[in-house]
Length: 315
Ligand SMILES: NC(=O)c1ccc[n+]([C@@H]2O[C@H](COP(=O)([O-])OP(=O)(O)OC[C@H]3O[C@@H](n4cnc5c(N)ncnc54)[C@H](O)[C@@H]3O)[C@@H](O)[C@H]2O)c1
Image 1 (cartoon, rainbow, N blue to C red):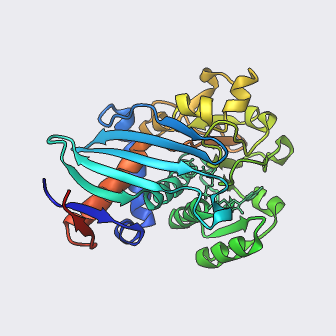
Image 2: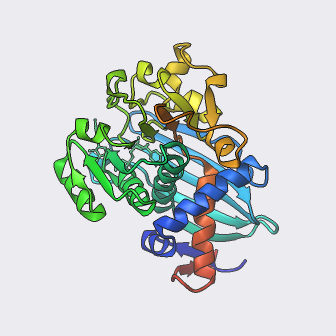
């Protein structure tokens, strides 16, 4: 068995820039849509009272991955991240394990990147302002990727003012109120999904919403009325309709499969995206294993090329 590389958070963030995360993530949606990359549905394992674990496999471009990751909303009270875990990369031809990656860093990069990919695909072409609502770990990377995609003017909102101010300073944006954040052209929500932050009255002609925080059963960042009023897009219908922002509106009978377009279909040109400058578009991201594969492949390539260092272990 060859040595197994162990890439920590610093190595992954050093290996994959926000710009590369965006292009790799976009490519992942295309390759999956074209049938080159495959991904069975993710498996949830509840840890009652704490949160849930997710097992997320995918295969493509000679690699096979399994991400084993948490969403434990009460973890920050213990001084721990909400999202923690490991990602195992194997050779898809020999099945040999190649690397172990910090899954939190991979998740942050691919979650942030999809906000930029969906924003560029679905927002108005003349959109200039962006906001992040919920400036924690994954909101921070959404902001970095939106800034890398060219949104130079933006607003950060968080009930913890220091989190909003710190992220705003990093991005060259400003900290503001929830109302100010909701007035931006591209609004990205990355809260724990325990409280609604977008109501139907907040919708304005021409806005685009990225809903990233509600990625499991029982979470929502928008009212069902708001969701049902938008032109709807998702990363994957099976996940979005059962454990995403769309779930409440689907369960209430207000949204059906026919009303929701897959982001991959928009990117390949099979389906239209925004229908005019006044449309209000909403993208529901639940997080896909193909996105993790995209970032893991980039990190492993960087390590193999000697661009980042990793510890190694022999099993
Ligand atoms: N869609 C995806 O692919 C994906 C990927 C990773 C995480 N997530 C989800 O995103 C959410 C956030 O994850 P994280 O790791 O960034 O968590 P985090 O704890 O690091 O950050 C959450 C932030 O939201 C803020 N917040 C709480 N209530 C808020 C409110 N009402 N309005 C605005 N901000 C509020 C908190 O103060 C905190 O800064 C979780 O629900 C997680 O499961 C989704």
